[in-house]
Image (cartoon, rainbow, N blue to C red):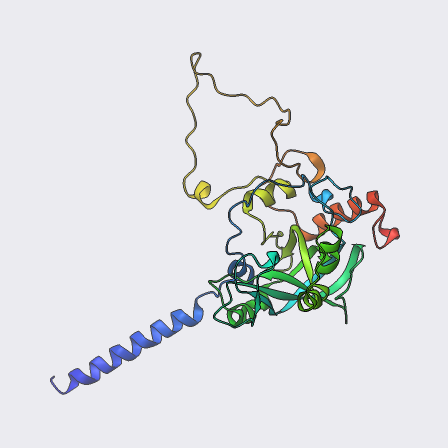
Length: 296
């Protein structure tokens, strides 16, 4: 029995190692957008537009917001280093540093997007070989290598974009530094956080740059947080002394957005890419900026 003990322990160790290795190999890798969306779970202030129709090229200025330069349908095929700054106020003139530098406090990566179709407006500088690069902030919690490894799960989407140099010029904040101007001319920026992506064929769209509640408001569905799903709210008790609130059906005077189509959200499921595309193309037709007039 004493001689067999080492053999038994060796077999147990081998089985355990194999089990752990199998569990590791079979564990799902976080999706591309799940890794990139760090920091998008909380609203960053006052909303500057009320509907996705307000982002469509040609939509009138609200005074605080200007519509996108283009609406495209395309697929994210790669992610590359973009530009890095020595402080987190990069657009306020912070010093540019090497992308992999330890001095870098803020990094903007470039999503390489294969443009399948320009649906509205026009793409500016930086559109070449059927591709554009969209700048996105790289989270400090994720490496570029990790994002590259998962880019195959990014999927296809509808994207509101504007060439960065042209956008800054339009906003009255032209880029003058030669190095930063060269960069700004080479990339597009997402307008109104308007990236709506179908991660897998037939799945509802996700809005990876928006917080969940804001995306639901704009896309016309009821937002359900993970907390709401795990612990439903109790049904209130109502009586003559404490009557329950009865909705009037009228829109709130303090509402910050209007869902797609202007109706109250009726579903907890985001729209499909096809349904959203139809809505946005119709809005572009109304503005006279649809790239294909036959679609109007």
